[in-house]
Amino acid sequence: MILLGIESATAPVGAAVAIDGRVAAALSVSGERRHAETLAPAVARVLELVGLEPADLNAVAVDLGPGLFTGLRVGVATAKGLAQGLGVGIIGATSLEILAAGAFGGGWPGEIAAVVDGRRSELFVARFGRGIAGEPVELSPPARVRPPELAGAVGVPGRPTLVCGDGALRYRELLEGAEGVVVADTPAAPDPAALVRLATARLSAGCRLLEAAQVIPVYLREADARISWTQRTMVGDG
Image (cartoon, rainbow, N blue to C red; front, side):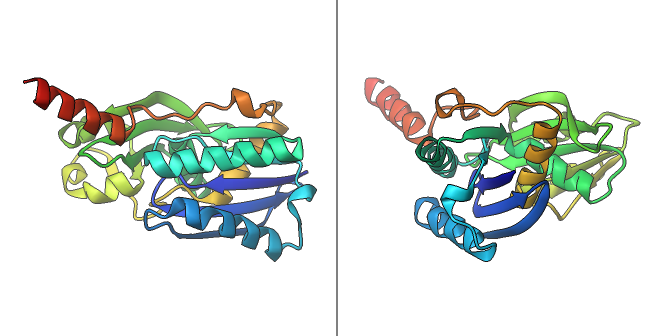
């Protein structure tokens, strides 16, 4: 099984290749809001590192979000295009699951809260426990919160919680002092290597690959362009 992972839901852009369950190559670069221009070269480079061509792929894994709308849309569209062109299936994971998988892979024994900075003073949050094989098990569904709500969304008193992600780092001061909460410096963004590890584990556990048309991004809110247009229309109507 040769699996390509595509990561572009947050600021960094990355790709990884797993061969028979082992991460053979991975890279991540700064997207700098140029996800569309950066992702294709990243995919080409990671395949080159292991001497593979797109035609060698058996499946594609992709970060489904939530995250930055443009980057998320680019990643999912790229995964769908590759899968359709190659006649292979797709397996998805949320950005929050990938963050948690990376943190559990680092050895944290307790619960984890993953926090993605959604910009516009909004954060995407979910809490996870450790499964039998070390995979993240969702304790709370992905939610959209405002910064003042963050501390209440990430922790449960008496249960040590590691909080990771760029949202946690940006609003660290709101979490410091919260009972049982530890803010991690890493992972700050979903790691493409963690994505392919998680996807491989799910396939081994019996999860099925999806067709491109079945893959649905997790936005948790309307696109920024739609929000801005609605706001301008409301002001004009007023």
